Amino acid sequence: MSQPQPLITGTGLYRPPHVITNAELVESFNRYVDLQNARHADAIAAGARQPLVHSSVEFIEKASGIRQRYVIDKEGVLDPTRMRPRFAPRRDDELSLMAEIAVDAARRALAEAGREAGEIDAVYCAAANMQRAYPAMACEIQAALGAGGFGFDMNVACSSATFALEQAANAIRCGTARRVLIVNPEITSAHLEWRDRDCHFIFGDVCTAIVVESDEDVRAAAPWRVLGTRLVTQFSNNIRNNAGFLNRCEDTDPDARDKTFMQEGRKVFKEVVPMAAAHIESHLRSLGFEPTQVRRFWLHQANLGMNQLVMRKLVGQEVGDDIAPIILSEYANTASAGSIIAFHHHRADLKAGDLGVICSFGAGYSIGSVVVRRA
Image 1 (tube, rainbow, N blue to C red):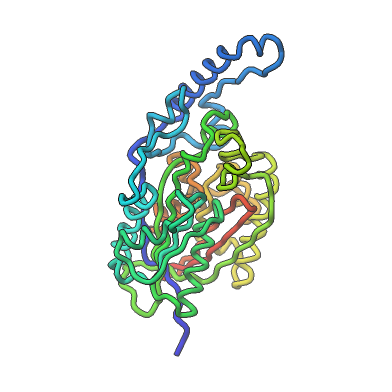
Image 2 (tube, rainbow, N blue to C red; image 1 turned 90 degrees about the horizontal axis):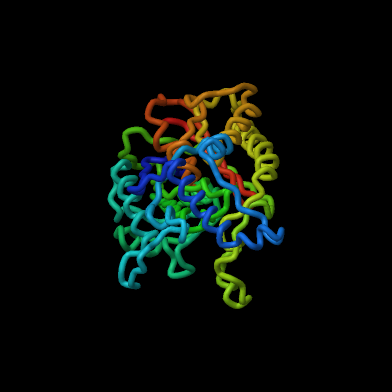
């Protein structure tokens, strides 16, 4: 009997109801800056403190290519006296916020795959941050959907989705599951420091879902065969978040700057771009392909310039959205969900036999690539 082969048969997308444009974000941030500079005017005048600097729409778009982002709560983020979302606490017997958006995306992916939740054998909740330590978010999502089998959480920051895709593909091949549901609930607005000019514009909220199943019994109209996966990690402090359960034992300030997203942006750009390009090229060649044979690249959506440079290194020239679609301008950086959003929105026009690459790169450093072919 031949070994079962993994197929991506459905994707789903939860998009929050609220949009924050760059203009709205800048107005709020600059009001915050003015309030803080007025509050510390004496220290600034004495040279004991540096004044905060205004942001601008031009600065954001030049630095990132981002024009807006979706968020679950808009009012709290734009309140210059708060500068973070405002979420109502829920009882333990209520569905958690992260599970709620994951269930929404999962149902959409299942519908596209032509599957019921009860046919799922495993649920992987893969995201940059989990709402809690335990019980696992995946188990709550599994129960809310009525899925079978088992579930577990995994976190590889912005590469969580591609790392989960490899685990799902391996589970299919070795027979521990016939159908796997991956969910990527990214409530990035809660771990972004909205008061930092260097990064206050980067992230947006979203949730993606992916159904991966054996090729033995497929109902989806246009599945994608997973030809190969490859993962790599290399430790770096250049993207970091120090929030964790030990903080309370260290007697540190829970609102300190290091308890939210931090990065050395220039270092990340300089180091990750060549790593990502070399990783993709090596993965493709190990499967007998050249980058120029790939019909479409669905890359991690962190920075427009980063993606453009990765593609120049791979194919030796500038490419447009037809080869490497960008969803940054609408969604901003959505951590692990970014490359999956690009795949979700920009694959329907490809033909049987077309080759594609889903690739993410992020904190760790971590890079995951998935080579797929339209079945």
